Image 1 (cartoon, rainbow, N blue to C red):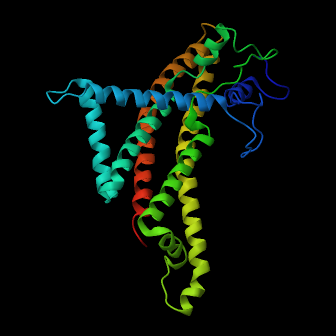
Image 2: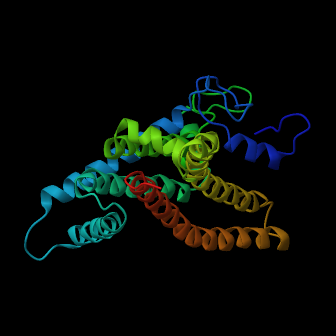
Image 3: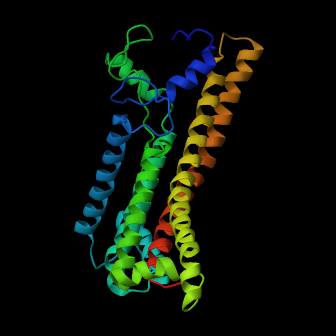
Length: 295
């Protein structure tokens, strides 16, 4: 793979792996550019979502009232864990009928998407090259650029956090009524009466807008930042293996370092994968639970 002019092979390697398979066929130059559609993120996010639905459906169909098998027992442990968390945060029983399954789906979906980060960074590119879909640096194939980690694409975590924001609005309006929800925007967190309430209304509204915006952005950015950093570390470790030049002391040392570092980081990253899925699920429950309560 030839490096671009003025860019080292190592830099080109990382830059190439950070470009999405999109409708433009090139790297996105701006942080926010809605003309770009990342087909790879859409594909892997939808595929993992369908797998989660299929697994839950299969578990429900095979569930028995007797002694559960390993598969049923594992699913039941996760379901009970999420149900307990939802019961402790969202106190409205009717809302929990939707929110608890939503939280379960979110947890398993994000966990599965995050797990794609454990796939070797060059495996997909190698397979696409074998099947003639990647091309080379001079003649790009349709899948020359491709990333398989949806949660390292800012669009996916922010899209999910925006859905949480909309659900918070929905339950806020459903529980408090449209008038009550709007009234709370202008009367909380600083409460007053008469003329004082009018004076504090702009400040209250500004603080509520900032709170909703900050919660939404931080929810998406937390997941994106952790998974993007993990993906980048895997790329840097892969470069150690790429430094192999033969059976000499330096190459053997770099090769061994590549294997050891990759294994250690993969084991550690398993905890990050599950922790980030759990945090996103818990904050989803917290934000929806807060929508049921007044300031």
